[in-house]
Structure formats: C-alpha cells, structure tokens
Length: 139
Image (cartoon, rainbow, N blue to C red; front, side):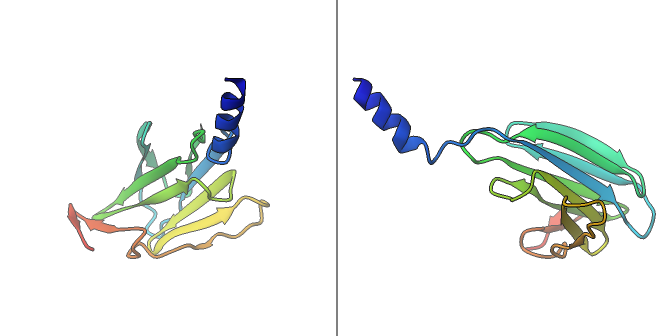
C-alpha cells in the first residue's frame, strides 16, 4: 500500500507545482490622458472594476495554483475603446509582471530594474488581444 502511495506521488509530481506569489501592475499611459477602466478576473477570482487615472497604476497579487493552470485576464475601457487580453498565464516567466497600456496595445516589462523600458508586446488587434468595440467582437 505504501509503495502505491509513493508511486502515485512521484508520477504526479511533474504536474503539481508549489504556489508562488505573483504581482501584476497595470499603468495607464494613454496619450489622451483619460481615465481607464480595468476589470481583471481569473477562473476563481473577480477583482472588480477599477478606475486607473492617467500615469497611475493598479496592482494586484495572487498565488498560482498547484495544478499550474493559473490565468488572469483583464478588460480595458476608455472612451469608445474596449480591449481585453491575458495579463498572466501560468508559465509566464515573471514574478512581477508590469504592463503599460498605450493606445496601440499593451507593453510588457519584466521587472528587472527601475530603468527597464517596456516594449510593445502586441497590438490590440492581435489574436491574443481580441478587439472589442461597443460589444461587437472582430475575429
């Protein structure tokens, strides 16, 4: 019986991960200097809608799940614009995932130093970041 338990534990060890604390920061760098609504969710948590003023940031922390399937996605709205994309997918190599939002799309920066300059990760019209305008989704 003990051998069966040991075999079961070692066979699933590769699939199970220790929970790790992650941090996501989203900064409003819109050139139009308007407030941005941010609404972030995972399969288990709804963080609610936040208003992020120009040049300010919204930040949240969480622990990854043991199955290695953690995913957080956020929607962003300002004026007539509405966008969404994944801000953290399990396997992302960051403990501090910093996003800067500009009109063209999200800019990602691994936090390695305060002088790190974010670079455009992908345009909002990419497949990862489906563009939604007033409830009409383009594919």
